[in-house]
Length: 86
Ligand SMILES: [Zn+2]
Image 1 (tube, rainbow, N blue to C red):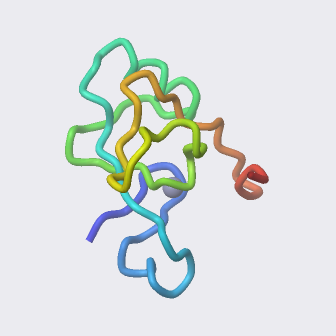
Image 2 (cartoon, helix red, strand yellow):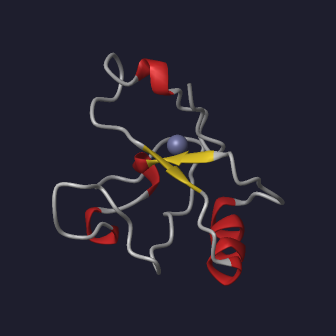
Image 3 (cartoon, helix red, strand yellow):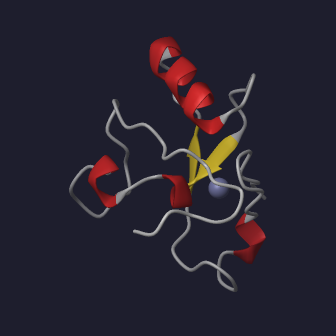
């Protein structure tokens, strides 16, 4: 089971609360990773941690059925009061 390090979304809740939510690994690119952490307000992260798809916009994904992020995709700033309207 994955848990989103940003919002606490859990993969086991996928089918109940948030259909279509998937989990992405933290980017391996050190430069992009720093940007991600800054945007998300997180000090540190680990390779095994996950961010759920709620933090990305449709244009962050490559075309096609596989939900792959562009290598330069940056998550949306996280608002604890809720997700930004899409
Ligand atoms: Zn999340």
